[in-house]
Figure 1 (cartoon, one colour):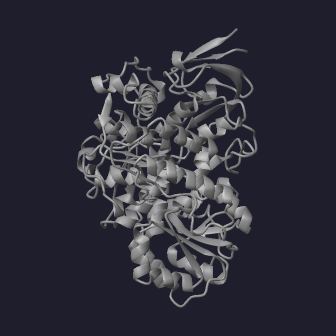
Figure 2: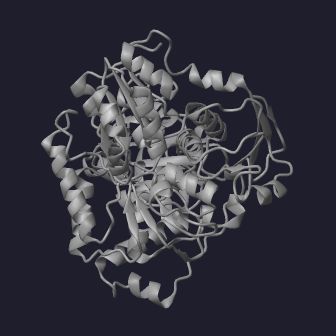
Figure 3: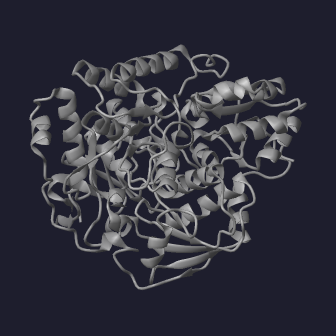
Length: 431
Length: 137
């Protein structure tokens, strides 16, 4: 990839410019009452947290949000975080807007076989009990935009899970920052979030332009393309505008594209010319931004970081994001009549699982030797511990996102297409 | 003589500690063995080094939302950095620092943090004042 450089500007080196004068956030009478503790200690914590965060990003006020989505797996939260949740519940925590959850860390119907402990399961049980008592809907999914209720153009939401945020911002035209678990919970309690970042028009304008010269052919290619762009952007505050996509992608393709981009670049928004709802306006604001072309060489360079033909495979994982019903059908179709030599784990949502079961897809995958997990996602399932418990080091996946994450968890991850993953599962090595 | 560097207002308490500097980005999930308190991603410039009680100085945040909970979990166990300084933080790390009551600052007026600070320097981080003081220049 070759960059065409333009003179330094606030858009491409924002930290070099003068620090703006800090403004005090404007609060409504109701918000002042919440801050004064008149609506309970839990809400007071929530708005205090939001003000602290909002000041760092120069938010002038809070914006009402219609939904919240929280990432809260027990490995990330730990015992201190669960105790924090339980204290909030004691303090009267109850969400005021529809609020849903990201995948769980423990499938309570299938954790001993993975090497997960009773301590992990108990932490999960305490988390579920606390969140349920707060009125949170335990959807346990990172594909809510495919299965629950996709947001609409211009809708302000407070979503966690970077894949959920980037898809909702880019494909649906919703407005959300990456809301970590604590901030998503605060939004659920107050029905608001600080108005900064992607809630503002000026931060949705493109800062870099990419022209795609090699078309992605299938899901993994889309993930690789997202990874290449994310890695090139490398910051939450960069917004790529992408030209040259010749066919309209599917929801699953954009799901892998966005999830990988967010993973490699912490990127929360993209525009694709002719495809996404804000792309036309984005193009009008793109004069003078740095531009680059993406060729097959860029795909090959990223792919070369993750596995070679003949490498051993200890486990094959389809996850990150959870599989849609269509992906479940594809995995089942490839698994038909096969016999896997190595474990194959397939993570889907609790909404997709019953349909996949009713249609025989789960049975087909499991007859071949795979296992379908519902409501979890592999990398959020104490990946280090289950890898050590099962002797898994060489992990193969078709998800560009998951192979980026798991290097830090002691794995040597490899990346191949769905078809190649199934072929490797049969042989025990990358074919 | 101490040297003061201005930055954007941050979050967390005033802390003093030893700087650990790299040009890499940061994610608690992607880069750390949080049980051992070391950087565990082989490709990271700080691979194998302990971050406990250090003032990490890194380019920006990367990856997912998990770091928001993880900073709180790390600090509760006493195996955490004292502060993190970025060229530019993302939303997740700031949210996590706010919950964990960990010092965090970004957007330094004088430029790139990886050249402003050196590993081993003693830094005083003052988030509410929007400044960091190098104590042993």
